[in-house]
Image (cartoon, rainbow, N blue to C red):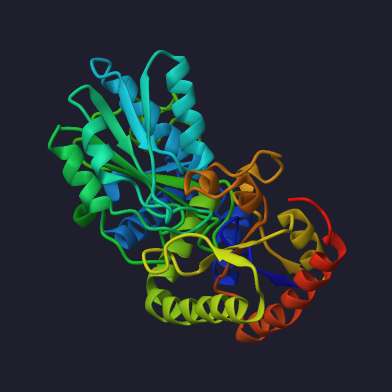
Length: 383
């Protein structure tokens, strides 16, 4: 099996699982309990919170655990909009993850004014339009750090500068950048930032939201005192421990992993470009998470390519895992001005820690044959 869909999810790191298993089998106490089993769990949660905070340049008290990156996005957006009823405008981009897009549509149905900022052909937000659309009535601007389908990095510092001139808060979905590239939340200037464990070799079902100290936000789940009374419910202790360990490992390995994985991604990109005709690279050449490689294989349906690769034990994606079963054309690819035919022929390769050079060589050996065979079969079809 060659797994090249690491933007969708990652295999858990053995060190992460080993640390988690202790809290599933032995140290299973409720963190709210006062006896030693509970206090030990609470102490370990705080250690995990510290690891995640340190990985993004935040303070431990600024990290709130959630059930996923999607929940973190929802929490940030709804929590800020509810806390500022005097401001009824929300601004985001046209290429956000469904967790943000669907929340924006929910706000719109609830009577809020929602603006989707367009992007250029590389997937970069139009800053001139953003500056015109952000007003003193805007409560929040939410722009992702890097896109999950094409990898394009957004100019977050410039976005923050524009928003702050109108005294507007900024949230960023950093699910695809956390643990892959070094950043500091205070240098970025954001007020809120979402991350997730299962994108960095941690467990599924655990995310976190950075909330800058002093930011007014409404609780997302009501109940007990957990997570500073902002997100009630007994903590997912093992998941949190796993997230903390995954963040620690990612920080420790970041420089080494980035150099190796960027190299593999470049090898894959150049290999595809040199061996397969009639293709289109999607996204920015330079301003992107380089481990995300997205190509349109013209005159083919992406699903046919995906299934042919899967038959050879090579697993890739046609876009966001959260909309993979939808028959609709990717909103990201249409936003960067691809035709419906180009969008429907798009395949995303996303490289991770456990991929090897031998795997990339295998893909480059098999993929050209697959594309050639599929095009021969579909010859004469109208696209």
